[in-house]
Amino acid sequence: MAATQVFVARMAGLAVFGPDGERIGKVRDVVVSLRVDPSPPRVLGLVVELATHRRIFVPMLRVTGVDPAAITLATGSVSLRGFHQRPNEALVLGQMLDATVVLTESGQEVVVVDAAIEPTRSRDWVVGRLAVRARRNRLSRRGSVRVVPWNAAEGLTLTDRQGTEGLLAVFEAMRPADVAAALTELPTKRQYEVVDALDDERLADVFEEMSESDQRDLFAHLDSERAADVLEAMSPDDAADLLGELSPDESDRLLSLMEPEESEPVRRLLSYSSNTAGGLMTPEPIILRPDATVAEALAHIRNPDIPPALASLVFVCRPPSATPTGRYLGCVHAQRLLREAPFELVAGIVDSELARLTPEATLPEITRYFAAYNLVAGPVVDSEDHLLGAVTVDDLLDHILPAGWRDDMTEPGDGYVGNGSRIGDVEQIGTGDTGADRA
Image 1 (cartoon, rainbow, N blue to C red):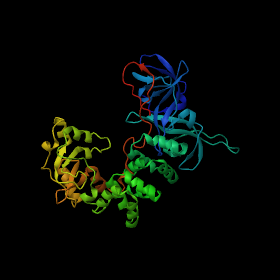
Image 2: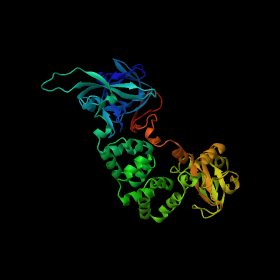
Image 3: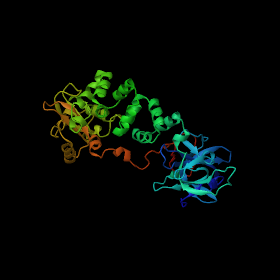
Image 4: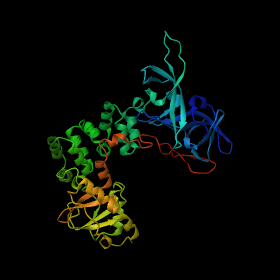
């Protein structure tokens, strides 16, 4: 698109043309996905009214031209299903205009009279600016319009417009790391409401992505029974890290409330110093007996619940297979498994020469280990050849990055919500992919 900034009120009623010049309809509104933090909302697409008066959604990636006379669409497909607004969405003309916001610098209440959308380097469009006017009262005449950056006004974030149910609907489609980042941006009361509404498994996933300080603050909100249930749902190494931030008495009390089979691996991890391989490791890597086949090993590493780093190695041990295992025989790399016949036994392709980490290995030793062997995971084995667990590179990074690194994440697109696609009747505009970008 040639335009670098477009005011939405001027787009209302513009004709929409396909790539071959055929008229499709006219613009009725702009759909945006509000963020849960103060950053500018992403433009998802347009509400276009067809000649039949049906209103449909057209993804913004389908728009190739915006000028004062018309909107031009690219080749591709759009859904003919009637437009229905979703909980995480807002209509610029229908909801944002005439809304009251507060200017952060002066505290003045103003009314939104227009909004400007502008493209980013990633081809996304965002609502970058608002045109506002001072509220009118008996003592003042209507003020002049001025344009301010989106972040210069408060009152149009998702947290101000949606209840807990709406937030949960948004969070459902987000990765745990993104939910954790978004959750910390909410007011404390809203954080507690969301934490209370999330189920134990989902809350455990979110806690695992939080900084230690945020974990402590929200964990303190939970009653003891719920806290123990969430700890059981967390991976043992993350649960041990969290408990390590609590007082010894509180940690022991929560461990006593957990099921014995869930608390035992956590207790073992807590027996090691937090800056050693024993303290960093997960006690639940992929462990197979020597008579397992390559097909069985591949089935394990395909499990979507296994983190990618942990899925890079399969560890082969004599029974018992739970840590601490029987005699550790070695490991098989995922790439090696892909090169072997499915019926082959893992015992025949095991790498018994790869160096092992001791549970007492320090952070510098672990760092040199990963660098020397080009690994993202490594076995932790005791002096009697029992496999105790595995350290992954993400465990290491969590401990060598500066404190609070999660709070400083500025990954592109972080916190955005509302990506995805709509499924329904499709109309072809020329040829090409559907290119939908709306959840």
